Length: 505
Image 1 (cartoon, rainbow, N blue to C red):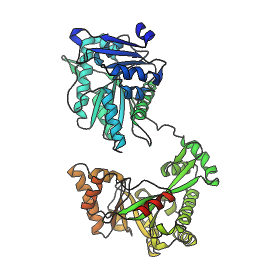
Image 2: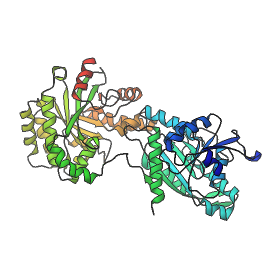
Image 3: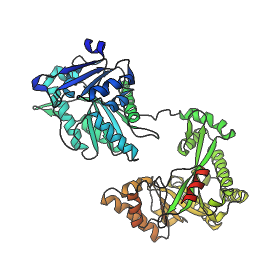
């Protein structure tokens, strides 16, 4: 590679017996150049496959976007360059079909499309290992055949749900439409660990996997970069062969627990409102209040992170009290445009376990001036499991006082239908996971239809969470769902944004 290192790019003709459709492979040395090499890649990609030699995979996303079809991480095995060139030029057999191994460029574009549409997706970066040992034991041709057979098997296993890209040498990228981490990792774990039969010989290839699912603000480059970073973590690990990517810029929960003590006193805890829409009329009829922490270092943090930090800091009750008071005071001062909206407020498992909480909570509501009759109290299944009798009594007291009651995130956890019969409820809120399934197979729709039918038969209204597409809404409407919330209407909004949306609608 000395010529390549000095010039930054080289074109390597393949032997006649190994040429694919491209015939020639551009080899670009991006070591030490990072994303600056993208211009060279883009120029070379117009002429055919591009193999990029890198010393880090942090800029892989940008290089893929520029047209890189294959990567090779330096330092590498002695024969890896030749193997990578053969793969880039079509020397390794590949399956042709909907999920055949393809260049990362199309994979990048497919992934970008999924993210733009808010669809579920995930990326796995796979590094095959033991290639030197397999080569020494069985020869290069059988090693090549084993890799090709493994790609073929992966293609069949994920057919219709993912695409595969050979990323040079020992690296493989998979972009998957199913964001279910456990499901896809199970497939990868099974297919990558089974021996490959080639030429009557069982060949065992090792592997390490980096796996990334979307985080807010992710584009295709960010997801691919995080998958490669997770792969690096898996390769550095002594035992774990699969490593899940951490979100970029995530604060350690212990540090957040310390910060929360100051955050509560400095007024960093705020609230946003997500609209709830009547399906039949399209009118915004209510909102769910959602806590947000405007962290001075990490930016906006959602309720899940906030309450996890509170639990670690033993501040769960103090946080819940502050949020309830804040939400009620804000809603009581709403302008005329919001004066008819219902307000949904979440209670925690710690709240319902407090002795005398119902009376304390109703006093707080009355002190705020917000009418009990427009208030819905939401409680998740996980907050009900251990203290069913206590919860039932609490909810009955709140309902008798004029509040309405909703079971939130139904379809997760234990999903016990007994809750619908035993508790004094007004609403069932379908979890986003169930809403996602309604646009899936007929069997998925049967499950959602069954939950809705049971709820309606018990006199309960049904609210669907996480509705993102017109197709989901149409199917939910056909099954009798009365209300929905989700990005199809709007995500969580600040009060001024909510006013503008209500006035516009």
